[in-house]
Length: 318
Length: 318
Image: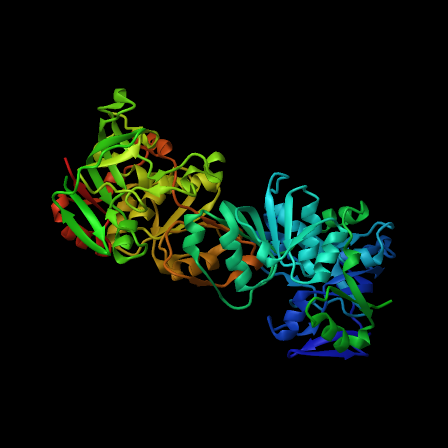
């Protein structure tokens, strides 16, 4: 099968990757569309020593399911954490933190930039007919954006700032806007501001940032973003860390203590609420799509996605 | 009046400090006992450029109250943050975060290492007759320890670790023990372990620290303590930062994000619950008292308090 592999930090299109086969309780999925995410770009840079087929944002169709033949033909998206079901984290319901987990296209599990992928049946969630492939492929990052609201109670009376208006920042902004909170998004580029404006979301420049935000979402993954967040959040306010940070980051923790600030690390979310939002058309991630490539254009696609100010780049596989 | 002053990082006993007088709505308090806290030691080291009478842990008696003569004779402790009552923080009830606050013996307000101090009447809380001066002088740090439970819901089913068994760590341990949680306290010194044992609190050595704690209280203020906390707390667990940190601290924030850890900065607490615990004899801070000095033994007292492994040093003023 065709696939895009990462091998020793080198990205390669492989025309004849050995066909993968589902294990017991897994399904084989024919991938329709897959999206390049910031994590993929970081993996290529060597953020984590992963070798294998890249990609974890996808929509596809179940074409083989040895233990559940009735599910063949289902159009599905897939939860990316494959959990053991028996460790301490799993038995307390924190399956995304399974101590023995593999993660699609990120950790010990071939990913979605291929004609086929395998996932446990329990990870595969059906997609309603009214949701297009182009929208469904955003389920995973949309779920990650929604995780913020699973972890922090955001009120319509809250003054909220999102730092960063890139791929994830835009989805975070769209989901936060639904709470009716007083929302501002720091956007560097005109294009980011235009996209936010199409959803009636207020964007501001860095020079317009105020103080005393109840909640600040840090979506840049930079030391500057984190420092800024700690300076503009109100006492007893909350900072949500919604990006991965490379290496160690310096922070003035006395400010965190004196102002009694809460920092909340946030990673993956649940797929079902994300699919609900898509079905009800309450968010529209498709405005972020820049371009679709074929798998054999891997290097070109990654080069394009890597350019600053670019939003979502897809691989159209079927 | 006699007082211990900090002037340009230099500690001085002054025999004839000008007598202070209460402003409108303030009271003059004759100080009975005052305690040296870690913050006092840090102020002397220059952690914050404070000049004036030091000290913020005290118990005393109201001897002058121009607008409330009926309160003269009350034995009191005092909330250390003097708030304006009209700023954004005050009107939302966060008076300890008042944007124009002064803080007794810490910021723009002469402190408690003196024969007399002044505080607004609303800051002065009466002490029940059944609470000794020696216990009441611990109200402020005990309130700070209890702040943890105002900010984080600790369950009897939680596995909790306190890193640091010094002055504040001991009080934190005594208050946490009341929740019935599975509590362990990392203690370096035999004396720390003995004090914990008198309250039936389990102490462990650094080599005995486990993993997967639901809640970790970091009470050392060190980079090592913070790093350790981030490594041993369970995914979706909580780290409470209960100490001041000097300068900037390096932390691996990717661990905070990937494990979705919550960090909570914690500073001051409410006095009334602290006084309730003292009245019901549910905690006993007096076991921490090392020695009482006179005000004119200021340098000696601070030198003693600064020695590692020392707990509470008091000034006996009346």
